[in-house]
Length: 399
Image (cartoon, rainbow, N blue to C red):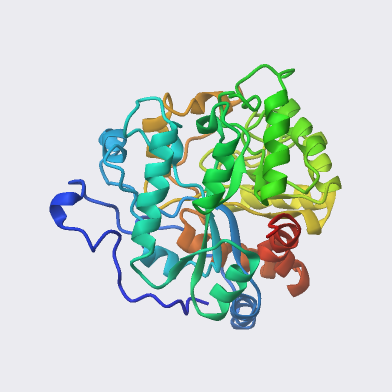
């Protein structure tokens, strides 16, 4: 499943060492002792065949390598260098990843994040590095994704989680599209000119400017994401869009009551419009009342709940993993990204990492193994790990 064209390239190796931040990065593989889903030889053969024959797409991940010392993470990010994890990606089995770029921490000129100049710098530097190697390729069309798989490469979709940086400049959406962005969130935790994030009052919804922005995204062919929007903004966005939309990374609030997860009403409205929810696995998100310890098992409970709620055609995976200490990173970024707003009030045990789905290299291999060992058909697995996403993109990504 891991026959990607990786030649050993390391991020920014074309630069002199003096042009790079002085920080030791974590190993991309084997950082922690995470569980591999057990399979029989026959089941593993099915897993291999699924990776060979079907598109494997992550609807949301952060394929960068974090530094070991997270105390200085924001200073590290102010250097404008985000280190793509090529070695780890080569082992992931993914054919395409919607990479969320970490633009909330692109603080080159500001200490608040989400600034226009910083986002443009972040995209440009990341894609400059990607242009210097041959395994990961920028994806602008669905054909780019299909061709990447055929060529043993990984399609890279530039995805931004919130639209605060466009301010009141509608044409900035066109500029971002021209620079390669193909997925844009309405709002992150905090509200902006388009609508309300998950920390805003429940009755705050999509603004008039937000409706104009949704129309422009439809016209351009940008996938719209409502993962971090509050409930009313989510519902308003679904109603305003002529095209299906994505909840790229969330879970079911019915299983765990936090603002970060989506209520049945939003998940159903998304599906009714033809959209897809990607199940996420960022630490301490997709846990459940009867499975308080966050692992692959609680993550898959959210998947099965959503499948029962809206059908297999409307559920996918956006694991929201990265290469590094994700729990430690959340602690370091708690104030900068308003992460406290996403938590509920029910106590739960803290984990050091989400066992079985700790990083992008192990996420889809274990997801597919879990689905195979739990009786899902190859047809349904193919839909969940990529087919459903491609169906939406074939409709949304116009030329």
